[in-house]
Length: 147
Image (cartoon, rainbow, N blue to C red; front, side, top):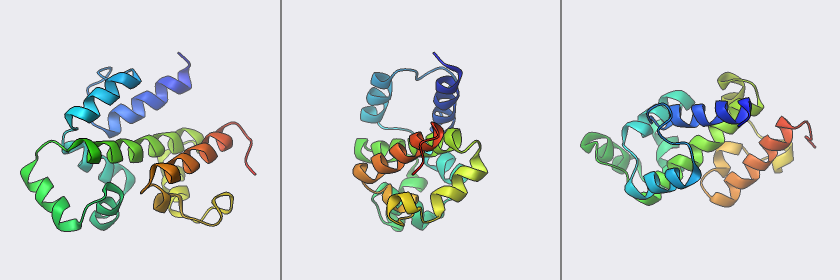
């Protein structure tokens, strides 16, 4: 496995609060998502990506009040919310790799991008199609094919 791939997996595991080396393969993420990620992962991602509760709730497909209740209960996330959190975390991890650091990545995710028809990448993460567009652009940037 390449060093870049290891770094990406480490970032993703850190964001989602998994033990070092606990989740290495896609099918294991699939299993964890179906079982429900721990709510602590939400707070990890929120802090790491400097998201407000309003932004985070929108990206997770819930209202702010629902987010507050979920935080208070500390229950596991349902599979759909776990999947949305994974999607967000994955794009943040890819952005950090492509843009060489968290600060650059978080700034880029919040700014309109000409290659995304002027859309703000973070706003596109509410759908899988939007997340795919953002991730594709980030991978192109990483490989030096930015147009």
